[in-house]
Amino acid sequence: MYFNELDLDENVLKALEYMHYGECTPVQEKSIPPILDGEDVIAVAQTGTGKTAAYLLPILSNLNRYRYPEHAINCVIVAPTRELAQQIDEQMQGFSYFVDASSLVVYGGGEGNDFDIQKKGLVEGADVVICTPGRLLSHLNLGYVDLSQVSYFVLDEADRMLDMGFYDDIMTIAKQLPDDCQKVLFSATMPQKTQRLAEAIMYQPAIVKIAVSKPADKIRQKVCLCYEPQKTNMVIRVLREFFGGNPDKFVSEELLSNPEKRAVIFVSKKINVHGVTRDLKRKGFHVDEMHSDLEQKDREEVMNAFKSGRTNVLVATDIVSRGIDISGIQLVVNFDMPHDNEDYVHRVGRTARADNDGESVTFVTLGERREVQKFNALERFLEKHLDRIPVPESLGAVTEQEIAQAFSKAGGSERRGRSGHSHGRLPKDSRKPDTRSKQRGSHARKMPDKGPK
Image (cartoon, rainbow, N blue to C red; front, side, top):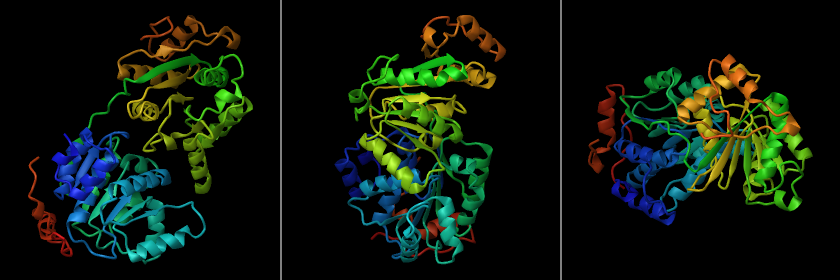
């Protein structure tokens, strides 16, 4: 389906045409109509499926098409991290280019006067406030933020926010919204705590479920089965080859400074990020680190340097794996096995974007039974064996017998012994406040007039 087949506002369609957006993704096709119609919506879809546009486009269409209160907050979008909030705002600027809608980004960790700037914007009102839960709650607790006229409340990556401990913050914010506020929840997974949140704040939501897809076919997925002391040297070999050099020798400065080559190395624990970064710097790589302990100013500098090519290797925790769209990443390295299959999909999905090719290399520590078990589960999920990168003799080659023993202890088997293979829509004018008030029962507040502009 194409965007011009949906009931989107003509000015939103004009922006999409200008940005060369034509065909909808599945989550956009299924989410946009019920959001336009005023229904609460739960959408389960992984990162990279176009979910931001799936909620921004219908909300911007309605904001441009109907009358909403001026100098008030009309939409609140909550995201788990500052980086994702910034990215949502970037997309908002593009989609709203021909739309009369203002936006404000609210998150912590910035410059000293950012809080006062945010306060001013919240008091004066903005059509769309994009925020992290903790910082919005800080402003709410000071008593000058009015959420009583909010028409749209969006939770992006709800499962991740709950994993980060934001359940109480979200509930506190939701309690200050009017009864007939439309709620939209996007989540990569739907565990019990996310279901509990949806039940607490939503009214008969439409369910949109997009199956967890496997990594793109254009990603060449590989694995290295090795021991912990071998991992760093094997990563160095992988990077040297990636930059076009001999894996056993230093890579020339000319190759290393190539701004067209970008790699991300995911490390599960932030305590280990610095060590991996230090080891790579010693070998001459242009590398930086990204994790939640960095100040916001430092995080922005790291991301800008990586996007511009001043650094071309980024060592990061999973803070970069979801919702952050960086073009031109050709290699993803999993220094540790991801927590689960979906995390793997999110991580390797940073490459081979926009129909480009990419490569991923996942390291599995043979001495760690749990890592081998996760890898067994991953190959079952992928329904294929990943191509294997052998450990060379110079690093103490791992034998087939050692690999077989490790898989046997983990309760699986390593069979390869070779180097690899392996709804009907309501009419436009029906989205009126009194209709939603009746739907939500006698306690619903009558909203200001939102008839056609």
